[in-house]
Image 1 (cartoon, rainbow, N blue to C red):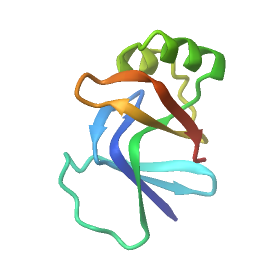
Image 2: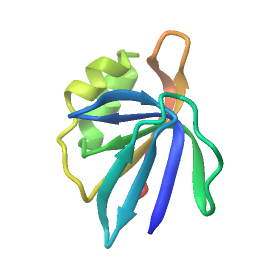
Image 3: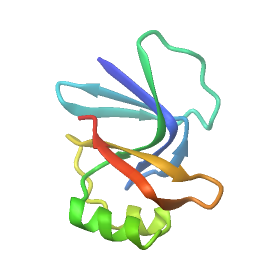
Length: 109
């Protein structure tokens, strides 16, 4: 089982969570553990700086939002939930929770 964590995690059903753990098994998100920002180190836990997003968004839509320096909420509203996709959103303005011109999105599952 693969375990991922980041500064924040976003899922359609749970919203924005701080330092949660996503458990992936057989190419699907199986469990999301809300640590409420307090977790202990777990063997094999992979940390990524940014926001892990469970779901999909088109690159055209992402680039449009990025160029407009949209809020993360606007981005999350465009995410299509799918348990077989985890994206990593990096280079975020965490103070204002906004996308920056150099924000990037990468597929992790």
